[in-house]
Image (tube, rainbow, N blue to C red):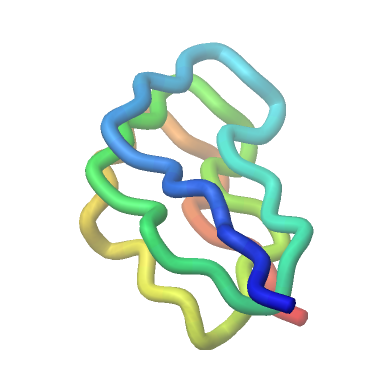
Length: 67
């Protein structure tokens, strides 16, 4: 069975404890987001996922631990 994963792109996330919470082990398409005024921008990110194409402003932690 093939499961389609959502693409998380071109969002503006402002004033939140966590910008994007990962609850998966493999995901693509987390790019071109603007994340501002958050405690942790990307939380529980699997090690294999690249998230370099996002923009961050006033963020406590950009990326936290993989699974």
